[in-house]
Image (cartoon, rainbow over all chains, first blue to last red; front, side, top):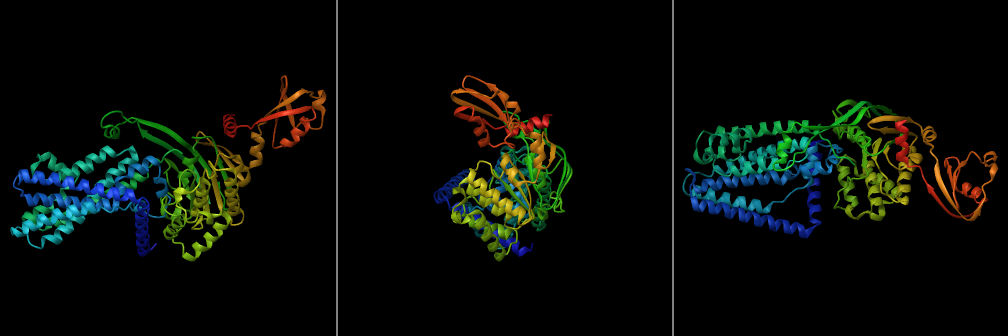
Amino acid sequence: MKLKSWLTLYRLLIRTSIRSRMQYKFNFLLAAVLAALIQISEFLMVAIVLHKFGAIQGWSIYEVGYLFAVMTLSKTLYRTFADEVHHLEKYLVSGDFDQLLTRPMPVLLALMPQNFRIMLGEVLQGGFILCWSLGGMMKGGQVSWTAVPSTLFIIGTGAVILFSIGLATATIGFWTTRIGELQTFTEDAARTAAQYPLSIYPKWMSSLLLIVIPVGFVNYIPSLYILRGELGAWVLAASAGVAIVCLAASLRFWRFGITKYQSTGS
Amino acid sequence: MIEARNLYKEFKTPVVREGRFSGIRTLFSREYRHKEAVCGISFQVERGESVGYIGPNGAGKSTTIKMLTGILHPTSGEVSVGGLNPHKDRRKAVRQLGVVFGQRSQLWWDLPVKDSYDILAQMYDVSPADKNQRLNQFAELLDLNEFWETPVRKLSLGQRMRADIAAAMLHDPELLFLDEPTIGLDVHAKVNIRQFLRTLNQDFGKTILLTTHDMDDIEQLCNRVMVIDHGQLTYDGTIPSLREMIGLPTSIRIKFRGAYHVPEDLDRRAHSHLFRVTGMEDDTVMIEANRTEVSTMEIIRIVGTWGEIDDIAMEEPEFEEVIRSYSAS
């Protein structure tokens, strides 16, 4: 199959997913409103923290806002395209994963467009905080316009890293079927922790967040260079490198996991 | 067309822990429950055959089909479908298969039926001309037109199954796997689906392998039957010889209005081999007959000469039971 027809198929599946969701218009709207409300309350939380404490261990309010925004946008990008990877458990429990395996296409490519999410609330919230913090730093002369393309770049590599972590966690479900609690740990807790500068944590924990679950490479490490000029431009390349290595490793693990799929009785 | 060599599948599930953090504790648990679902099955199916795969619940039917279609990887043993290994070369192998699971739809639940066909055509690289030509054919044979525009979730079970079978054949595969295609359907829907499958097999030369609990499916569709029990093939052969082996009698209970008279010389009459009397009560006679040899009407005609029939109750031999007792012996 040629690349062009893969893309056509992928677009068709995404359109299908959106159309399916539109069948339940009320639910669709309610979900959108609720997501926006959750985002607003999350934003208020951060705003209060920043307002109360201002700088955190030498990190200014703008810098912390930047870390938060990059993480939110990376996560949004990951979840927009690959929300079903995060929700693999329901396919394993119901046995619906069977259907995906009978399709003549890569399983992930069949799985991901099953539910294409339009996460407008997250995009607006993350975008707003990002503009606000970058704007503040530009006005203060800390960063220049060159920070914008670098930021977009690390949002992309960050999404790949988060996707890889999500995929590796989901793959464990082929052995355990249930993965909810593990996800709380590897995805939610790790991501929440990395919304703040890793230097505030004890050494073992920041190492954990850089080596075992490399969420630190989503926002913290690159921002050392982008915002503070520390380390060097190679940090961006290193982040991309981490993203590629994570992706390759998690895809390999995923392919191995599929051979251990147990399906369900009928 | 299909070749299974020494297929073996063992399920290994960690024993689930109770209580807090059960997920993580289960993950690190070393306790496993082992279950051998399929133990050493080998067979070959030639092009154009129509094979029924039967056995009691939990015997390993679905597990076998899932291994043949590349969904499950066997613990050991090898599969080849149409010359390809569905585990090493899944994408290519499944392209030449049609797969239908009676309990599960492969259609897009919230969209009109016709939209699912558009997506599948794109997925399997079927040209619009081929798609339309095949769908016209299927629509005629399976009466798809009546629910063409209906969202799949609003279809009746029979309609959904017809739509699903058409979907599985849209890319014109040589080989069709069906797991319980008639489960839960009414008689009319069953007849319709059997007719379609027969057409596929006899007129288009498609190879079919199906599992079922319905003996009529087997009798009307299959020229070969395989019986699996406890993960092992216990029978592989033609239907007539299976019928001979499992030709268990139907028990019939006949209630007479008033007096009746069973002829004493029953054993010596011409129809004596057709049934035998197993018991007599006040106003009822119990007989056993092999209904592959004698029709119910014939029995009623003969028994009707004994007295005035009030009521008849029949008990078919339970197919599952038959298979089980056959496997046990």
